[in-house]
Image (tube, rainbow, N blue to C red):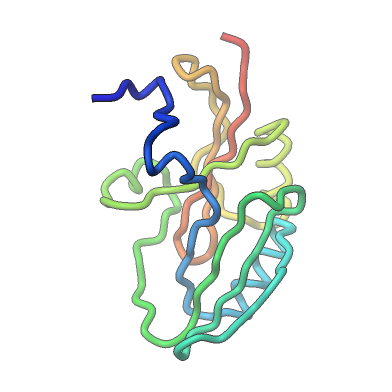
Length: 150
């Protein structure tokens, strides 16, 4: 078995790189507007495929990663994540994380914009991080991460 700390450069899977995360939402226009208004995301492209609308949204300062929003009929409700500890009870995808210069500054701005904060900024010394979590109106959680001195 290959060590997790050593990248397997000779692996046929060595070219895997994170590109995007897909988020299913019930209303396309509402979701695009929320991500633009609350998080300053930019929509680079929208398309319709098989009765669904797709939008590719990029953070204000990063073209290396994006969210693929999918919207249209058939989206079921998911539990709303308004509290971080309650969210631990659901199996599967949990949250993407964003590196930021200041967790406190980002959370203060998100609060000013009316975004639900699921976990206030706090330090996790064992990981050398300061973190906080927020949620979109459809119950999806997101983490903001800042490195701190050990």
